[in-house]
Image (tube, rainbow, N blue to C red; front, side, top):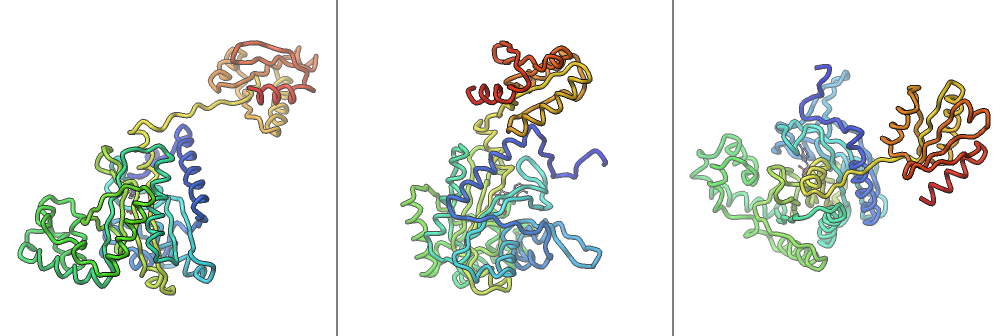
Length: 422
Ligand code: AMP
């Protein structure tokens, strides 16, 4: 136990951190371009927030939350997703009183007691955006376009946008009855989970992985046939904007998504050919959620993407290139006094923004030069007793092995000039 991490969690090791940071840089950059500001909310919240905000009948709330009672007898939950917390923060901090729309993004770990497999973890990372204060279909299209912009900049290929409208509370209640009517005579053939869904939230049956349930629902009416005029009009406009923005999409009337709060627009972005965990992002509109969480009636829309899945897809598609690490200067020293001089020189050069490594193991010169090669240093400075006496050191250009004797007084300038040139 002491030497194993909890199931479904990952260590992100130093040799993997570059790709995470590059991904995060793209996310932050695109957020800025589209006018989103970062919000950081707590990792845990009152359990009730997710029960209300995500929805009692969702898989997340029914079986995936990491819930615990703290020493003050409060029920708290590690956040399973980012929208509920962002909505809570929007209401609690009265962000609705500022200029609207409010455009926020978040980036961080989420926790779900999921069955771990490639691309599905118990602690994973999401980037997500939320826009509060606009009902206009242009923003629905823009957030989808923004998500696609991110994937395209990262170099991902073969993606498809699955799009649906799940209607509003009005048309959904009509549809719900239709669906129940359709399934009524076969209700007993559904799996036990779907039998419970039949009464509480029959649309979720579309999400069931059970083949039998899928067969039973195959010919079922879809919400597309029953949208009210307002929802149909909104949906048509979203499509019109997406076409104008040049974003191809695929209408999928069976797309319901796992969270209860969606109304009208629901979408998912799927990467082809990467296996079972192919959803790399998704989102939708949640106009009633702010009100449900105690705020004023405010429309909202957002999406979230899984960073592990993005990295996995980049790797599977062969897009992510390993970045080679290299440093500017390696300082090799021989003898106690030279070692001290090396420490001072390293500090001095780092203050000039150079990437400097130094031998802390007092190894042989040969071993130190080998280390310099491993670091792919541009220059190696060699300081021995004799060099110290003469107040100079040998500077070796690692690329071609050429050497020069440079005085310590000129060292900084010599390296800066040569490294900038290189
Ligand atoms: P959701 O919040 O369920 O809409 O998920 C949004 C995105 O987060 C998905 O498209 C996945 O890319 C990612 N995601 C969701 N659950 C997991 C998980 N257990 N492990 C890794 N990524 C996940």
